[in-house]
Length: 293
Image (cartoon, rainbow, N blue to C red; front, top):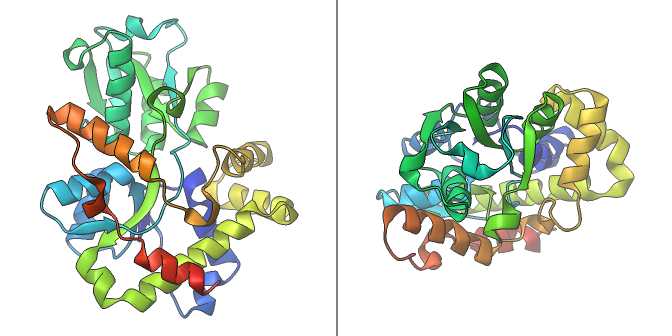
């Protein structure tokens, strides 16, 4: 399976470390994603069986004719919009270069929607496609011409410490948003229902472990080890993940309103009406997983 390592992957790290996967007879290899395009292509081509990425990625696959489905919830993305320190208002991004994963994926659509609210249309700025969050952070840190990017922890924390300006959480502007989710090919899920349900049960077990205050010290050490960050940043990442309001969704619950926002933003970019959400998810495997816990 392929993931973007970060706050959203803490439950997976915990599932590995506590033996939740192994107890269910699962051997899970986590590959770090270079960008969302490789996640989508790799899933469609069968190189990865499970992907944890932005819900919009699954939507893009389905819209392109690949029969993929979201199988659980996850989070709202934990993303903040960062700009160079000389920028005081988002209107000043007119004519500037902004950094994105790729130009036509979920967090790019979030960025476009926020800028539209500040009077900037798609042609008022240039997009530099940098890939994964660490690459977007490095692009802004190393080149002051890279004026803005959407970043999540730990890279949002690194960005603040590097002097980049935090313009606040993107969810505060776009509303409920379905961020990182597990998604698979529908045919693979049907043929491997027991495996998928066991996998999701292990993920939920790891999530519960992360959210349990009794495990805070061990969880912080796990974060530091897996994300290669110092103890103080690990503690901050863990605080973000366990926030009762905006942290990881309890038991990977699915946010339907958040998916509707994802669909609205993509449809707005394409100049069409949002589609019905039902074709993009199947929660039967999640329900089966929870029934075993």
